Length: 605
Image (tube, rainbow, N blue to C red; front, side, top):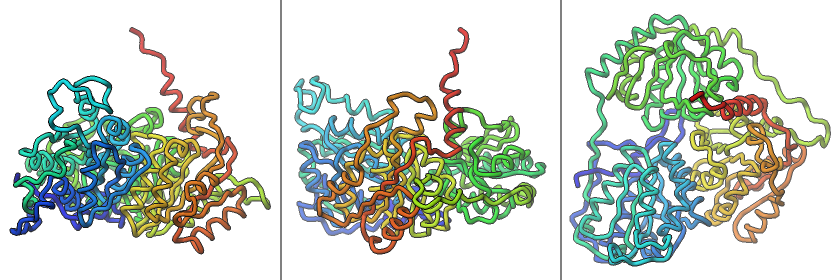
């Protein structure tokens, strides 16, 4: 199959220094294959798959062993340059692969048939929603058992082995079931190349008796492949640019807003260049935070309707034209469908099409191409930014704490702000950390990730593991609520095994605070744990780990000094005791609006 898989050096870096874009697949640069055959031990299906993973930039695979994948794991371990990271459960392995893909551009996990596959499924669905290329590999049944009317363990007791496959069909862009060696090479290559082209997860099932068998198609270096680049329709691109330029050049105070699909479109740099040439005010949607450099001179903050950062919504919603590049308008990002935007004022740029106001839609137009071409057609217009600059009032600081006063969450995040640099990355868990972290001002090069579209609580623990494993040049700072941590806490163990030095701020406020603000009930109260005691027990004297519990600002200052000083090479776990009603004002507003959207009565029949 004439395809190309990029090397690790092909993984792109965003213009603000953040890693996180999918690998840029070139049609012209190919890997060089050796004419010297491998020995038979290297020419197996398992080693071929392992080499392919290394070639696309995967150096760590997150796994949970099971009897159907054990032989395959042997062959993955044997591959130089590939490290197997054993996780405590499949869900966390999937979340780790998600976090890894956000930093490295692609991630991979390996689980066993059905019991492992259905366990990892939730994480794969999250990666699909976030447009992350992720290779989910499952050790499948013995190839001799297909079609033999046999009942296997790890199944629901039927001789039909397709249940797992059917579940994955809706959350992956390609599925490959490898139960013979003749087409294994093509199936694997097609799956991996599809993941990279579509920036979505794929599913590969490998028969448990096939991984160790040599085959002529694996006897040499994998054939270098060349993924054909996606191209814009030339006439459509020209028409879209002409219509967009006419639409924007007649506007008095246009603005630009970047969304999460800038990443999958590899268009961050083009978006920023358009800002530079146009002079427009620059904002991001909440899920776009971290993709656009916040040190840019025209950056005005996060546009999130009623819970936007200060003065941002006023500028965006009062504009007479706005470019939204790669947005996702769902009930959460629109604050319960309450954004004050008008379609006739909006230029919406999707990864492969452009919509101009109430006018035409231009298909087969790639975002990157469109933004680059549009930059050459726009007149300079700094009116919106000048308006922002006139009305802007610097944010105040939280009230000064009395000595030993119980710590407030806004004080906590004031101190986290001071920890950020180009050598850090922030992981924000679903919950009030969404809103508190959104207000952090990211220095140049500081990473930032959260799972806005899928919003699966507990995601951040595995994502922290995976991101830290990929971005070894950054120290991850994770902000996690106690309810979310209880879902996936086990893989703190894996962070310690891997020698990671992440910092987790565990915000202990006694329950699911975000759900309290949407709809309260006794089910939102959880059993309190001794979280530092739990992490100490997981540590068990093996690895570098430091834990502490803080109840006031004095404790917090001391803890941060220790974590960034004497314990800078350790995994640091800081449990922050907070009042159950201590929430951001943005969560209070957002929660009431989302609650109203959820509780709308049925339309009349």
